[in-house]
Length: 125
Image (tube, rainbow, N blue to C red; front, side, top):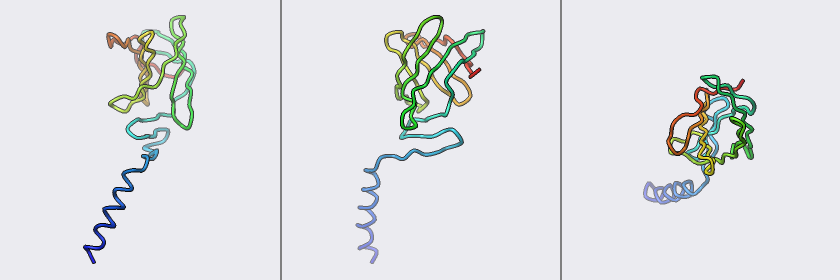
């Protein structure tokens, strides 16, 4: 009987591998889609260390934050979601080189070319 059950089990496991990965709730306001995290973070004004201020408008579709509009130092930038190796939400504007990284407790604005922080410890005001 074990020999008969083994091929059926193998077929079941292979069919499960072909399915799309589900969205997994890992904690309140945090989800994971595939290898990319989704944090339920607000749009609006953000205050950062050293007195930096910026404004984010998040574009969310199907529970995925796929783009942000960033107002910073008098400029307007559109940053597109760029999957990261770490799975953290990473947004980039290739024209300006700006990169925004979301963490559940803060945001970080980087110069994508030099990888130096432009605004750190950014939190919703």
